[in-house]
Image 1 (cartoon, rainbow, N blue to C red):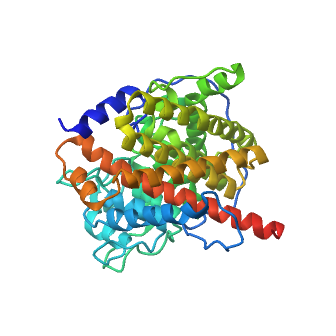
Image 2 (tube, rainbow, N blue to C red):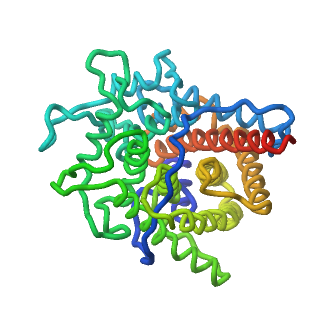
Length: 430
């Protein structure tokens, strides 16, 4: 076992590493709710910030962002790695290009999209597989690519590429919905066969319906399904899986990270939170209490900042040789958080107080500092990353995927925070 593999094993033992893929038992609670209609999805973009706007990180900000940008262009641009290409689109928008010069969307559709016959549907239905024959990830989480393309603002009705017979985004959406196993009346994790594998799908369904796709459909088990009901089940699940944190907030206590509740979800539940807020922005579930419920979820997310960063600092004291993994854990958590809460703020679902804004600025500064620390440790060097990617040890390759994916989410989070500062500056004239 390599030194990195040993470090990964220790990191898992400490409970602070990786985007967990195994869901854990839930803590029940809740009531139902919904959201009010909101503006359409905003395409992924990076706004150029005027020099007058002050950003956290000072002179090191551009250095860190340039570093992340280069990692994304080089690593996420790999035309053989569909999962990475999707993260490149997430970070830099629909025009992101693969290193072979092709548009990343063209590579995804032309090189990786497959089709199969589904009961009850005419013709072959398109889908992206979990991985390639060589074992590279395509969609380790169902509809990750679909969700990315919908969020990128692509038209539902236009062919995804110029190739003859290329499907539309609407066709991918219809195929995705038909595969869902509906469970009407169920709540929390009981509503889904794979609770940690639904956030990407449901976000795409909500945003797709807002863009004009039908709100109801026939699921694979023959039951009628509606986007409102699925979005409500998802909201209830996020509330249930974070309820133990809510209780700790009320009691003034703390929690340990033992893969319980939301800790057992991919990237600490960041994607589940993003799906819930994206659905609320699109108007699902249809209930006027959703904003109030999401406000409580925002408080929990903010409460996690000192909790999770303290865990990283304590782990660093116990195992300083884990520095590359621990710094990346901070990049993972804080990058996803800045992206998630940034989107919520942009969509009118999160209005931070002055104190909360300072907390977010501190989180941003910490993220930038740790990106630069990872550079000092040579984590982002091409040769180092190539060695991890080509390793036969699954844990080592997973660390490579974490580094690339987390760089993409961090870059996106930083970009959204910049956009928000520019808008606030324009609104106040400062």
